[in-house]
Length: 188
View 1 (cartoon, rainbow, N blue to C red):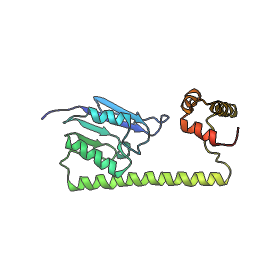
View 2 (cartoon, one colour):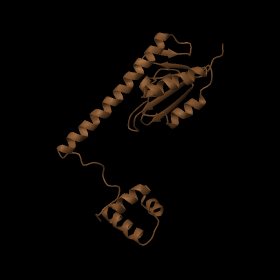
View 3 (cartoon, rainbow, N blue to C red):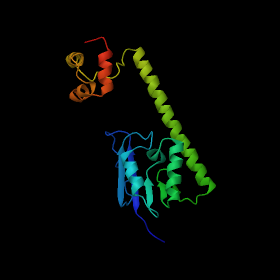
View 4 (cartoon, rainbow, N blue to C red):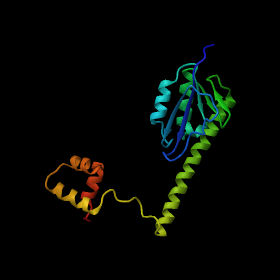
């Protein structure tokens, strides 16, 4: 029996969060990490991890919601990996998937993945409700403007003089869409 690498994948939702405790105490040959939302699978660390994994490797993940937030993405990733001969181990849930899994293992994957997806939906809903209440109370001001009023005035005058929107966006360090939004606004 071939012995592969012990590979870890860790993820925190933002740069300010500490993800080092996720696989603490697990002996790993290689660790990949992301500090981005888990809402989709387009994450640099995850993509590098998936490209690195080979048959007989074991992928260690702290919890299912660290790998994927949607049930479809979770099932797809686990099925793709196990089809390639990679074992997927979720430490928090105590589950291990080899591709030769029992119907009970597959049920647990689906149920716990659905719970993670449901939890994400609840978080988004509570966030929206909180923002709505804060707006009513006058406590939510929204995002701060990207540019000061003097910069907006300069963008408008330079655009009126024929300068390209792309050049203005580069000069002011904003997107072209932001330049267009400021040009549409009536305030200077």
